[in-house]
Image (cartoon, rainbow, N blue to C red; front, side):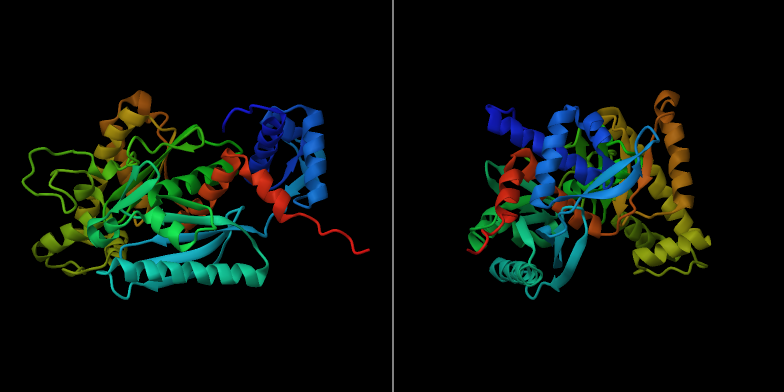
Length: 418
């Protein structure tokens, strides 16, 4: 957040701090608000009174405070404030509405009619957003803006955003943020990489579970390759050009002769440990395993099922993936040293795989780092990206203090009739 330059800015800043805390704690006491925000009791009392008059905070009866005592609890009630979310994938677009509390509504999916024509793709994006805006009008929802999660690399050049995705190169022909601004000139537009959006959702989820937000987090989403989102003290770290966190392109084998599918840079991590590389390994080796239930074109789900059932080929492929995943994670840990690492999207959720991964981490990492190693597997399906996109829009409004102006306008009471 910016530093307040006058009393109005300070008041807005304090209100945004309280709002953010209420969003992160569905039930909380005024005493705990004072403790967490470090604002004085009188300030909290005044802010909560104002919020109750507006209608965005309510009393919820007795709850347990952090001290264990029963105290009066309060809760945020802004279920009617939402963001419209768009998630750009290689062969379809997904759109939905997301509340400030991270609840997804009215999700739709549209497969590209022609993925070789950028204008036709943009038209589908526009149609998807217009359907969500119509839903918001029907439900009388208050819309913060449009938050767009993209695939591939997302390059920043000042306020211009360009997608680089080999799976659908045509997306790189336009400034994607500019294209959405042109389609919806009156809306607030936020654009970021899907891995960063996913990382925000994971960071928020972990904070809600433990009553404490992680100081640093690395979220890795696996699919065609590996994308990564880095959160440091609640903020996404994007780097100079916006590609920080693209851990899949970390080199781990400079001697390989095989080129990466996504660049001329060979020997990169995602070519050895990503879900796509798992399918490639089955395709290249299945003829050597006469008893396998797998086929040359087995899906990822079929490979995972065979692995859990003890299929010899699936076990060899997944053990290899666990080893390379651990090897790459070791390098990332020495560079970033995150408090938590979350693995998600199409990466397998399996106790068996987790045990193999940790056994390799124990071999690669020194005991001092193994002792504090915290790798978790995401509890989200693909909706984690959508939820994170909603949180990204909310964070933007809180960071700029615009949330207070939005609330003041959106909840403005109509004057009584004479």
